[in-house]
Length: 371
Image: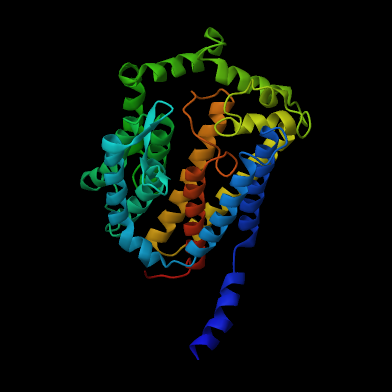
């Protein structure tokens, strides 16, 4: 009897998927493999093949997570946050150093970057907090401090690594979730204004390399062959692509090693040189369609936790994409953050595919009124 139930329900449940956003996600990840293939001058090694293998595994991971009940995420939200926060402390004490930054924990079989997991954990923790908050209490001062503590504790630890890009993503996602949870505008605009006024102080507290990045952002020509080299070459690559690009495998900036990190942080410049403005706009539209779907799922969800989870995770991915695009186009300082599903790297792909898996799970349970 049990076998009969499983055989009759599971195929139907597996086919009941939001196929349009899933196919868009697959298209973005697949296009990322094409770009990485070109970045390696027409070779699947060393990036494209591994990207495809990881992506195939994470598609299964994403679809598997979509069947997890929301009450499970509600139950583990705070314990998960605590575990990831402890892991961030562990990075400071025992973390592996790579590229001048201390961001990873060596666990033998895997190199774990807890700051990536914190992008998800902070959304889960704050969503749980607002789920149990009495109606109308979000605008009171006692309700202000817990979510701020959820946000600024990991942000401070991530800044120590140092990893400004991830810290900004966690901060932006957390503050946005507070607003979605009912925080009045005055609680956002006033601290925002004070933050702008404190920029000189924040600048003085930055590491030397971070100060140089801000200086280069304001004037890339100040040191075009030194600290300004990355953004200068990125602009050249994007601009040289024109309307429809130089053609597949014809990107000179990346193939001749002028463009640094053509497979990670500056993969969008690699793509834009060969696919041009049309390719860049098409990729951005694909991301926006997926993110718009995630926001609509949140707005259609009956429970507060599910609503905040879908919208918060969607906005976190949005900031992930936005910061990378602003960086490679020269509209923001270089902060070292990849383009989700397109850049080479397992940690960012794990984060984004986990977020999408949870959002699909919210979509499945959007009509449930009780967790």
